[in-house]
Length: 318
Image (tube, rainbow, N blue to C red; front, top):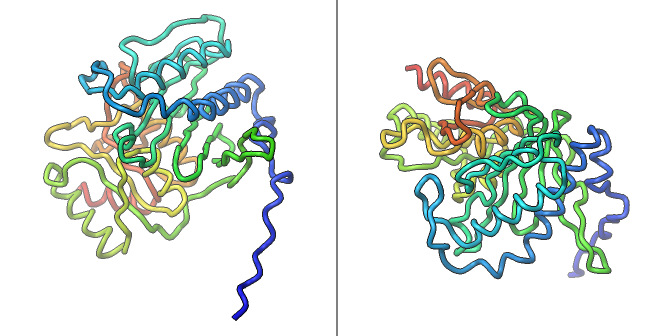
């Protein structure tokens, strides 16, 4: 039997670059997203130097930090400041925000290495960035843009500035140079959901959430997918449709994820892609309407397809 004729390779010269795609945005915002893309792309070449061991320090939450966590945070903060576009940086790995340039247009939130526990097993991890024009505290609806970088089998960058959700892939040219090329434009969560993931200890979940999770298996026929990196778990929901949660538990009634560093940016992307989010509180609604006095505040998080979030709310009221 003859082997099937291979299809012609994609002509990447016809694919829009990230920089060309950003031209629809205000120039300062376009420059900041482009700068972040280049910084995150260059960072990968340095990762092997910092893969082994812990730094010996703990972050402001008392959590042990890996050497790569510390280096990634320092490199990101230094590089973003050098753009001249950032006046304040709030980061999970900073004891206090960096206040640098009062005349710069943007305030940035960073989870500089989301899923760092995956490093030793070579599983996906990434970076989450929120961009505001106004100082914190702010509601998520005031975001100018949200961006994440996913270091996986291929390296992708996803952003939204309120004009749809767009995904770019790192491509190497023949001369060894690399840039981000458009992979998927105006992404929307598929109407037929396929996957779900729920973090924390199932024995500590509210019994109504455990019942809902069983329904995701039995009634919705979803497949369980959870890898321990919010960026990677969210990327699965974005592409396949589904549900993700890091809930309130008896041990952590306010949840584990940080509202500004993790919850708001990815909830923004989820809603821009036609999904929904919820802060888990009886009187609450979208994560984007949550506001806390501290940039370090935590929040329960539930996001995914609108119908699944609606079913969750109904289940949690019973």
